[in-house]
Length: 452
Ligand code: ATP
Ligand code: MG
Image (cartoon, rainbow, N blue to C red):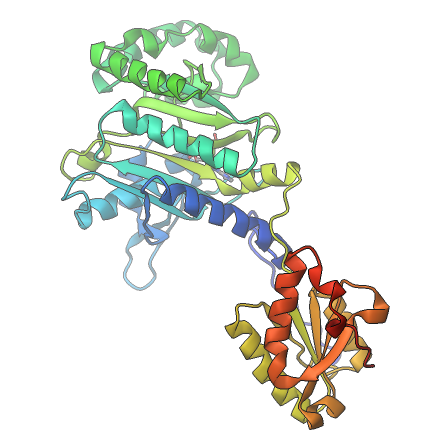
């Protein structure tokens, strides 16, 4: 490489984040908690491709929505001209796959997913162009019991994650017929206030007036608050469904407020819609949104299949965990292996494998560009690793089939012992077990044997 030539760095894409090693612990804590909570309700994970045919989203989400109008990463496959889109959400993909593989053939199915979603939005706190969602879909369930189960499951997840101050907002947007009746009155009402509507609302007045209700434009708040409420247009069945859901939530002591303006961004919802909201994240306070979408299967050409689901924003929830003081488990290891000399390195590899066989997390010191490093610099690394024990194999130990073990968290004068190679695994296992047992092994004279 010529010295004069400076090579330009290639950076990541705006709005798409790298999750660095220091953050992995809290992501894993989140993911593990999600996995165990969803499993405890009988949900099975599904993984669908992150790329789908553009038609799928255009048809499934609704043409007059933020997502389809302006947020999709769509492109043509340069090989064959297929129109493709990076998934902006995963309900469409799940339903597509459910129909394609007829997964509800034997009856309703509970499924969940996790992974990256892509929307071309203005990046800001809590809003990214690649972000992650966890979602659950209850496919084939028609009653409010299923809606309630999803909500109860969310509540358990917040509890298990230690998240407080997330409140539930609930609404019913009825069925297509009821929305049609409401729509006529809503348009008539909004026409009377046309001067107050912003450009987007004017544009959507006849194509998607319901969406105007969740506008964030301050000047429009007053008129949307006074707008005709869908709740007043619900027929008997929709009302019974909504009442049924509320009864189960009350019985499970889940507080909620009814927000008549809650309509959700996606067009395919009917009856139940809900959002979990917090005040702790500024403007991007919705951490989870969901609802019922009984018509989506038929929109996609499948058999009529009632369904209900939710999607949560992982970045927002992890930010909430951090605000809560949560950092996740640490990346600390149990043992750091320090070695000097070729024979010692070979033995260190063997011993590290045996310790891992016994279930321990072991970091084996490896050479950097500067070489393997002195004994002293290796011990610094051992210290920084957070290991409970350093296993030390110097040239002297290696030639005698011995290893030294240093307890990193104990006082300097009696924290190191030397013993035969073959006894090292048992010794460390006992020591770690003893350590968990209220430092019991500190009293064991075996452990007090200065070496270096
Ligand atoms: P918003 O009104 O905030 O744009 P939305 O209605 O578009 O939300 P949904 O499509 O319901 O959001 O997605 C479910 C959840 O996914 C949201 O409640 C949010 O937590 C998260 N989410 C949506 N878009 C983004 C994004 N661009 N960046 C990070 N998280 C997001
Ligand atoms: Mg959005």
